[in-house]
Image (cartoon, rainbow over all chains, first blue to last red; front, side, top):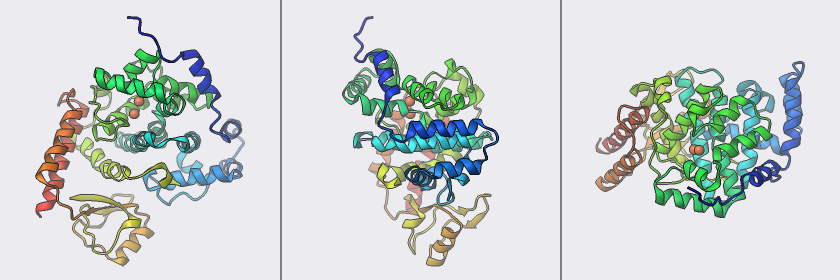
Length: 285
Length: 104
Ligand SMILES: [Fe+2]
Ligand SMILES: [Fe+2]
């Protein structure tokens, strides 16, 4: 089968890696990464350094304190966020709060889907008594970052992909593979590598539609995939009317959640999903 | 019908459809309680962010069937004995419950 690809992979990847519509980010992130590498740097010092960027500080604090991010009104300083959430989660959140600003209204469902998936990931990780629950939440938040980038950088082509998926009955990521030669999970991986996020975030984001192929952090990959699917099952998908595909059998085996546990998770997140339907990114500011 | 509201949108007279609990799962206020100003203030102080309340809006039979169809459609390819199958069961149970709240 030789279908013509509608985007050139290599040049798109380069484009993604050059993305400049996230102005203060690269500089600050590399500084942040450097500081973390030095074991002598205290959380407090890092917090203070980050706080120098007023815009970033207020965005970060607004995101974590919004009713939809799990710490409503509880985190008052960047240092506090670092202590509660950990470096890697904070780094992911800084990225999130920046990238989601550039969305046009047709991508709002994607924003809602991301927040909801983050809630689901946290809830599932809690139920499974995982450590570093906040990192699971951030992986959920960023899992479809590749879709965000497609929306911003290739909106017309991406519309074709979604239409094609809808008419063919295939999944969106398979259709991306067919029409683009890569999928939004690949893009997520490229950009997260560029942002020097740790592998425990890169791999779940890059493998959330190919759980079996993940090169590590399998539990995180499975939870990210499951949280995405649960949210879609609950009507919080970024695109409506796409039936769920069965989850990878390995997840059934490794995530033995009981009916009671699933009930609890669903009960926890259902009202938030409902309330999210009426929100737009502006509401988080 | 059950509804979730932000604590900032809570007003006197709303009826809780789910108990309010603290971080440790301890019940602070039971289901069926009617909210008043002092309760709302206390919840805010305790950093409770969302409340589950009776919306007062009835779910019609038609809406119920529509919702049910949507769920069934989404789970068309999902076997009932899988994790996602369990989620489907949860969602249908919840939907029934929401409808039940009407009759009380
Ligand atoms: Fe995805
Ligand atoms: Fe997703």
